Length: 125
Image (tube, rainbow, N blue to C red; front, side, top):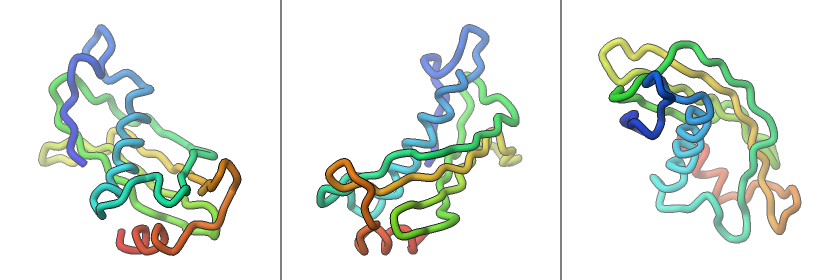
């Protein structure tokens, strides 16, 4: 997913505020669903973040074009681990931020087995 860094994304020094990297990654995870004509909440199922490990490697700045990816790493019966990267959109493709995030499937507010229609979506990635 391509994103342009706007003033609202930055601190007073023109550098992306740290929490916005998480927002950018959340959008990319949602795009996994939208790209397949689905929503992140389907049939009463949804996903919540259980755990994440983030590395801030280099700053994104006002005006930068960045690319955000979300790639499934490990699929279990009720959880999914994704590798997410934010790269500079220029020819360098420099990695600015990297995160491993585990999301858990819920139905009715309780942990649930990931339904087949979501498993098919993740296997396409």
